[in-house]
Image 1: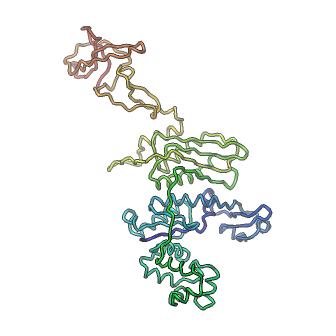
Image 2 (image 1 turned 120 degrees about the horizontal axis):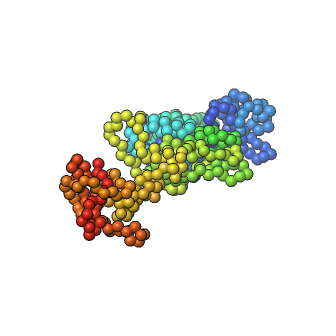
Image 3 (image 1 turned 60 degrees about the vertical axis):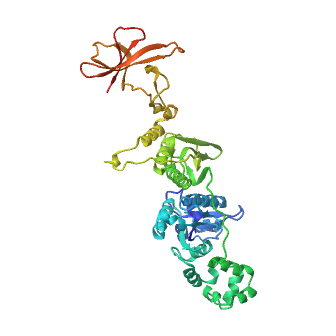
Length: 471
């Protein structure tokens, strides 16, 4: 087996910057009690101002005042960690959150679908960059070794145990994951690299060091299995983005909203499902959330389409107060069956599938402003169709042929038909609502070659009544 480890060294900072339109601006993440606030992480621009991790907030403000602040939230870090696991689930059925701020993926069984490792790795990096998460990736025969190698060698790929032993042997004993006391003791003995430790008799090491030292070494070399809990994607998508400042304009909400919708699309791809309804919560200070319900007539998971629909819902909204955070909740996640696309399409850049056009119009004009024609289970021609929202119409195709052009009211056929092609078809219905009809319908042809749908009342032999034309 081959395991990939994806390490996120700046997960807390990346999670905050994803909601910012200017990630290059100076920003500091603050933690600690209210009596002693401390700078936990900073951006390069904040470092240029002289800020350093571990500095108190009072000292940072005395040094510079041109930087933004955000809370270093451990719970939010866990949410991003789980979101990334949901994204990775589309690439492997074995995803683990065993290590903090890292993902473990069993990738050997997925290479038949995603290609050899170099192409597979490029795809992982491309999608993570588009999501806004900095990362390091390593490949090894076991998950523990992949995690250790990701610390020191971004992009390394070790194919077998022999190559793994050589790669680990070149590492410092302080970078192998041992306890600080054990690594310091080895270094004082002159054993500064792992290959020097591996050259010693195993019994000697076992006598001088705790059992955890040999156990960890065996796990890295693959002699001892690492027990992992595999990730299972949840049935609900619930992600919240806290904004760095109060937002009073709808336009300023488009960027964080697009991030959330992209995360939703990645989550859906991992679960192999779509979304039919979701709700956007715009959170205000001291007021109830502004809710933007988004409903679709069919399950979708295309990020661009979902964002267009959400933006259409947001644009006409009048914000009652500044927005402090944006939250997206999706509970209706049905199975997604992608529609087949045509093999040849003349000018795809100028075409838009009806489903997408319908959803965009509903988002911009309202659910009740876009109607469709549909059949209705009634034998009477005047009542056999209705117009309404697509989700309320029944898809029912009558068995007998019906004309495409139905007259508003039946009129007397002015000329005698030249031939009767089909009929009679008797329709007797409507006794329950006072609009009872009893008619014998015929398909006839006129002297000009037109096909007409005509009828006579049951029991009468008079002239035909024209009710519709066939194309």
